[in-house]
Amino acid sequence: MDLYLKLGGIPQFILENANDKTEQKKLDDAISTCTEDIIKYIGEGDTQEDTSHKLVHIVTNLPKDRTEYPSYSEKLIKFASHYVGEKGTSKLEKTLRYRLISEMNVALKFGKSNQVFGNLFEEVAHRLLRNGGVFKVRSLDTKAEEIYRINPQDRKYMFFDVNEIENGKYYQPYEVNFPSIDAIIAPSSLFQMTTSLSHNTNVAGLEKLGSKLSINRINLYYVVPTVLFNRFQKQDFVGDIQEQYKWKYRINQYVLGIDISSIGPKPDPGSDFNVIRSRNVSEADGSIRKPDSTWKNDDRKCYNCGKKGHIARYCKSRKQ
Image 1 (cartoon, rainbow, N blue to C red):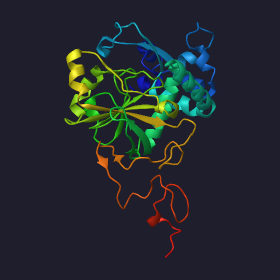
Image 2 (image 1 turned 90 degrees about the horizontal axis):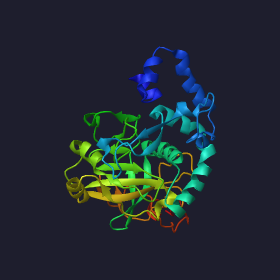
Image 3 (image 1 turned 60 degrees about the horizontal axis):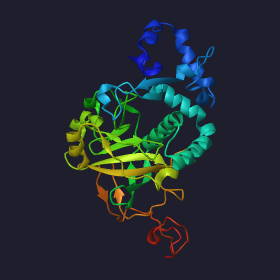
Image 4 (image 1 turned 180 degrees about the vertical axis):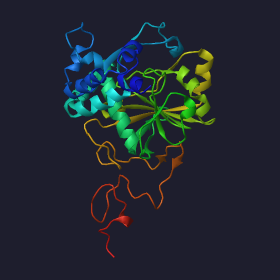
């Protein structure tokens, strides 16, 4: 199982190399030597000692995914494993973030994006969300802007079985093509990463998670680069018609912006994008918190010091 999680889901390769430390080390070597050229290898033929094949696998849509496409008809490019994705993205993040921004501009123009860059963005977004902080969101139903607060996670939580999911923790599925969602904070927050303006929600994944979700309203956050934030619109559901109807009226859709021009997460709003513009805060459990005496940051300028993000009565420059 440990090798499956590290090397990826190719049974023959895992079984043949279960006790081969040299072969296993090649994966770490491939990660340490990979460059942004890995992007151009995708879709090309085999090359001698092409390390990209150790890092990126092609998977397909399964019958259980119940997408609008016939089973086994889609080619989905994914990192070989969560381990590879995390390590590879960490190494290439500084180099590729500018190409990611450029890729987002293409997505804005044509509504499509490169799958590999989408994988890279997903890894970056997972890390920033796990680290916690305050993120700007916009309701795709009412268009109102709010901020969403996520508590920092003490470690990376993953699940094979939905029964492993604990409330209040940021969980990711081990399954690389798990339908509908990329992460969950039970019982009322779901996350779907995308670098495209169109990303329909497959109700099959919602059905799988049903036992861990609130019987009340559920918030589905489409996590996108900030360049797509203002253009992203409400998405459709796909899959069984009856299931679509059931979930459509239980889910609130939001778009959540991630600033990929910044490497590190910010525990509080610190960029122009992240400035708080709403007086409501969405908590991880889906509730809305009104500002009170403990909320000391907003988008007004302090009349004592002139700085944005202070409430005057808490300003250290306040005259006594």
